[in-house]
Amino acid sequence: MYESLLIPLQQQLLSIFSHFNWRNALEILVIVFVVMLFYRKYIRHTQSEKLVRGLMFLFIAWILSEILYLLNLPILGMFLKALVALISLSLIVIFQPELRRFLGYLGQPGFLSKTFFGINSQSQNGKDESVDVIKELIEAVKYFTKTRTGALIVLQTGLNTGTYSEVGTKLDAVVSAELLITIFHPKTPLHDGATIIKDKKVLSAGVLLPLTENPKLSWKYGTRHRAALGLTEISDSACLVVSEETGDVSICMDGALKKYDDLVTLKEDLEKILNINNDITEKKNGFFGFNSFMKK
Image (cartoon, rainbow, N blue to C red; front, side, top):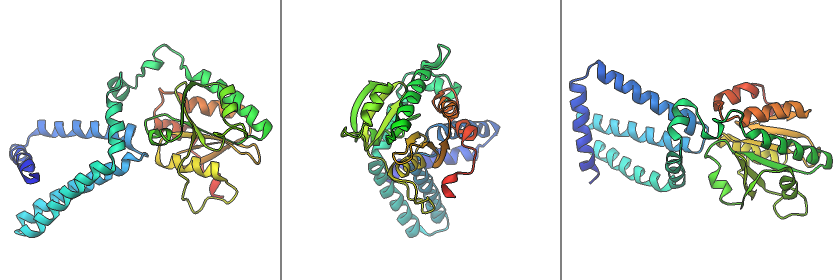
């Protein structure tokens, strides 16, 4: 069955390459542009990147199997092609959550305008509504640092923390300093986990995040910092961390940790993170272009 599906594709490819011209080259460039755009915006630095790498490996293996057939090595070619078919079915099962979230993201309103023109329906009215969220975050951070209350807040900027938010206690509440202070109060059952924020909503609390496996990380960093690093190593989200022992405030993004000594700089960086008009690469280069002191 697998070979019967590939035969029409092989015939189409042979037909295209036998009559290749400049229009075909232009079409290939358009396809490459679209694929790279999707990769940069929604796949790079996420768990789905592993899926893409696996698909690229399978594509190369399939080409190699065709080369083996041309070299009169049909047994090796058939073995490699059967292996590609088996792994392809396995990838669908293994990466089912990522595929489901990605397909759901494709169906969101304004997907094409956000992807190709950088326009978001929530930011077309002028000033970004995330300013209110920043104000509430700053007020909560002031309380946390004053009372030495530990906190771990995930600022979700994409679709990459969905798996973890589903594990925690769902709240779906409007962000407020009072709510964050209540969640991270030492007497509440949710204070040990992470709280996930997206747009103006607190999606979940008490979420368990993956810990970093970086062997060079200093011993002085506790579980909260290790969880923040672990999540940002596999997603494009940012994590706001307040140390319970010292009251220090840090932001973790792209597997790097930055400590803040004043709330003014913290507010500026939060504005960069939550500004949905900025590209994720600009965010990283804009204020995380430093040598991470966590390796010192």
